[in-house]
View 1 (cartoon, rainbow, N blue to C red):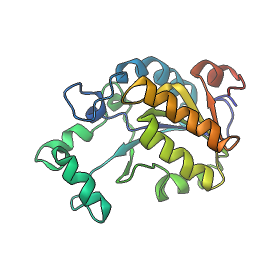
View 2 (view 1 turned 60 degrees about the vertical axis):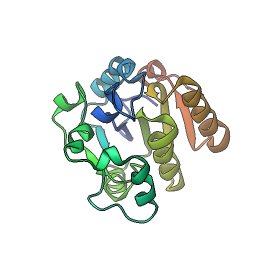
View 3 (view 1 turned 45 degrees about the vertical axis):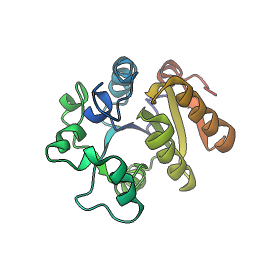
View 4 (view 1 turned 45 degrees about the horizontal axis):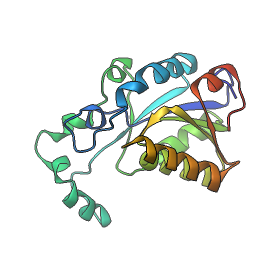
Length: 191
């Protein structure tokens, strides 16, 4: 699978300030290392790429109330700025798919997958063990093949990133496959 394949869609998950800012409680230490591999993927995929953003609902419901009690900073006045796309992603001028859930594979992305007749989602972004994996599982359950670009994703630490990738590969192959940016760009098989 290469970016030239017309049935693949790149999903750049949650490349937001809240994960980029080293002072944020949700900081991803390796966030800056994603710029080069994701930029290359975005260039290759062109218009067949979308961004997603995790957004905080005005009034969390159900178990999200407990979640946001623990992470109350996200509800404070002015926090919404943290949920904007980080540089350089904000310069792409694309409206992201907003989602109040970990998985980006909600109604809007599902509709896009069906409209474009996408057979494979190629995932990159953050956080590997959370929103990337949740999106992969939901898409796979819906019958869409998934490739996680392992060197274009990051997590709270490298051990957690590796563990999440191992779960994806061990528990969900062949529905979910792992690849690298180079393999994705040049048609290698990946794991």
